[in-house]
Amino acid sequence: MYVLKLHAIFFFSYILLDQITYDDLRHGDPSLKMTENNLDVLIALDGAKTQRFHFTTILISGMGFFTDAYDLFCISLVTKLLGRIYYHIDGSPTPGSLPPNVSAAVNGVAFCGTFVGQLFFGWLGDKAGRKQVYGLTLMIMVVCSICSGLSFGNSPKDVMVTLCFFRFWLGFGIGGDYPLSATIMSEYANKKTRGAFVAAVFAMQGFGILGGGIVAIFVSFVFDRSYHVPPYSVDPVRSTVTQADYVWRIILMIGAIPAAVTYYSRSKMPETPRYTALVANNTRQATSDMLNVLQVEITIDEESIVPSGDRNRRPNNEFGLFSKEFRRKHGLHLLGTTTTWFLLDIAFYSQNLFQKDIFSAIGWLKNPATMNAIEEVYNISKAQTIIALVGTVPGYWVTVGLIDRIGRFKIQMIGFACMSLSMGILAIWYEFWKIPANRIGFIVFYACTFFFANFGPNATTFILPAEIFPARFRSTCHGISAASGKAGAIIGAFGFLYAAQNQDSSKTDHGYSKGIGVRNSLFVLTACNILGLLFTLLLPETKGKSLEEITGEDRLDRS
Image (tube, rainbow, N blue to C red):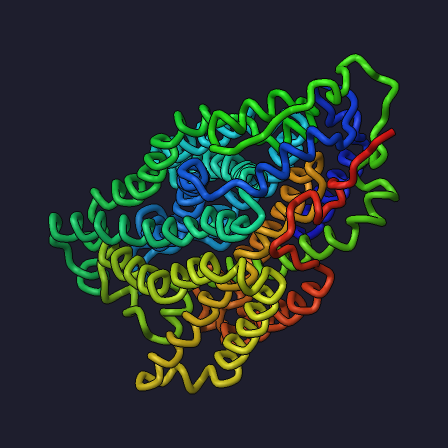
């Protein structure tokens, strides 16, 4: 059912976007030819030395991604707690847990919002400009993070419905950050370090995941030490102290802080010179904006500037999104970016969202009945933080250091190959890894999948769509690619929830039917990574090239 809905959304999005012509995306001067002045501006931008503004942009854009990751992944730390608080069953030998449909909604609804936000803000970023909507996404995230923690209601159902409502709109704001941050950073960067700069923005996601774990550890530690309560097996009712309801709310609301801190700086950022020069065709403004933030030398030939009133001159490369010309020039590229991101996110988000269940399955986490509610949050958070420290964060920053040396294509191929190998090893010898003496080996290979996801396709699928499409479609195509990824995340979030259940119906979580088990689920994820490896062959290498050289926008029109 969910897959059919996703296909319907993609179909109607395709029909809508197919109606967008180049005229719809034009601003200011109607003549969008690549003039010598435009090219001079872009050459100066590509040749600019790395400066303070570049690092400021990385920080401003990156804090948005820190918040994105924090907000998306912190929910997995508190879902067990939500089950204990709102779905306790008197006399049950096991703690309360969220019903399958509620758990799927709570874990996945933010991804649904992100999916819609990526499509909408990606399109809007090309229609209205990157700067015009960049601050709006942060404000949505701030408001909805706070409101998620204030979810109210007189019954468990009311609280969950309210929480899901605000997390959908939180995801909507997060979705806008993907195409806008990637596009802005790629359009400001010089060609020598563009990959590292865009990767550094995305690498803040690793710190967001790590930050969520650290915050949850701290909050749960404070509450656990403040209220000494017995484990569930000793006293089922007292094991979930009333004040535990504050724990999950505080953890969710803290996500608003980094977004709020950077809102002012983001609102003051100028429009990217590439958008102003190539889409708005305002060379004077592009030059002025660039000189205000970067130390570059550039001169403008006033006589060669195209008059803004000349409406009879048409660009040589004018064609609509999803037109035959677009499909001929960029169709395979779009297929490559959408499929690789889709397949990667099935595997990546399945593990991130439900790694606590994997840890429980191999015995790395204690039986829930032997812990109180807050202690369980602490242990789940500790496990996720260890994985983030060992595998997630290092992978991101190795990508930052090597991407402009090795190249995007090679890193993505290496990442998919090593993820396939690591997951295959875990799946084939799964029973071996469950033996207590071998659990460290499981953690090593499990961490390797995260390392090579981040030193691999999780970073490159974000970078490539911001480089290989023309400026007037760049944000839109990145949004489509990212939305395809989130469709994969939704499938991973909903599908793995059911699929990873034990094949013995007597050993499944409360309310779930039997599934294919963790081992077979790992085989499915291995297959996804192998397919991702194959679809990567559709993508070009962009290392060391200017954006205009990659897209063909560097060809002068002298007519």
